[in-house]
Amino acid sequence: MVTPHKEVPLERPKGQLYKELASGFFRVGIFGFGGGPSSIPLVHAEAVKKYEWMTDDEFGDVLALANTMPGPIATKMAGYIGYRVAGWIGMLIALAVNVIPTVIAVIVLLKVLEAYKELPVVQNMAHAVIPVVTVMLGVLAWDFVKKSGETIGWMKAAGTLTVAFIAMYLLNIHPAFVILAVFALIFSPLLMKGRNRT
Amino acid sequence: MIYWELFIAFLIPGILGYGGGPAAIPLVQVEVVERYGWMTNAEFSEMVAAANALPGPIATKMAGFVGYDQAGVLGALIALFAAVGPSLLMMILLLNLIWKHKESVYVKSLTRWIRPIIAVLLVVMTYDFLGDSFDMNGIWVTLILLVGSYFLLERVKLHPALVILLALGFGAVTTYI
Image (cartoon, rainbow over all chains, first blue to last red; front, side, top):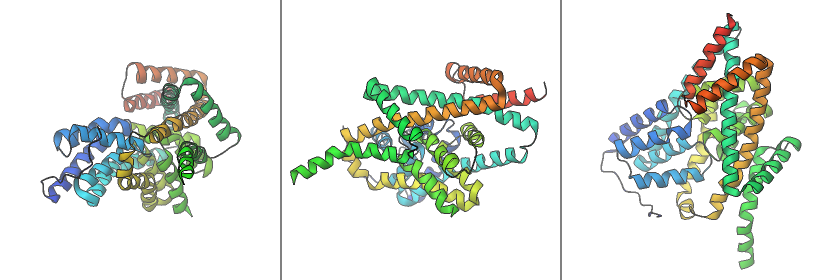
């Protein structure tokens, strides 16, 4: 299942690859409504079907790998595929066309809203959006709770949820430290093993 | 210094946000609202709404906007770099190492045990937003919007961007009645 990770150079001039990356990831960026995870099928459509930068299996491997790393998934895919297809410049091109257009759009949209903030219409519109975001977050929260229960068992999940809540909201420990504690707990058996061997 | 603060504020969600962009939302909220006080919870939820209504990765849109809002174009670039750069570099540089351990129990259990922590952050954030909505819209309007948007998002499976547009329309209409 683990395919040896060999870089197979594509038989196309660099310039053409840059152009392909630019238009491919531009489309992924502007059509990927609903955040990073929803753009995964779009990346697949460009990388495997349209430009044939990689096979279906390779794409699956890249996706699995991207999932084991932290950070936004869409940009990891764009950056990594760009790198694999055309080196560091490819990476920068794929990232830039993927990210910049929508960042500009969000800045313009929010700045326009801010300029008319005092108008009652705009205020009501802004307020009406809050419950919608609440529902989106609630659904996302439930997904995370459910997946926790399914992967580590409901008893353990309930325990971890409680401990995490106490640590972050009663003891006011920064979430970063709570997550780092998980790292430490998971990798400590590895370190112990290493020590016993020596 | 603002550039350094922006870098740190988006570096943490970038390297600890297991589970993709959406998992970074509560981590960004902790930095942006609670730690640095760059925006209120209400402003934060407007940003999440705007970011959700627009296409593209959510974490980078938040980084770009907050960076620009606090420190202009350079701020936006720094925040973006912090959100994207480290995890991407890690992915490229540690590629072979991770590849070998892809099936490793350790790498897999990392995601598994971090998930409940993100879940707690999300639950608390949802609760905060609910309170904000009660304060600003009152109980009845909030309930109508909650039920309506849940129905449209989860049952009808309407696109989030459309649901946000509908809510905007609803808010506009209620101003005049």
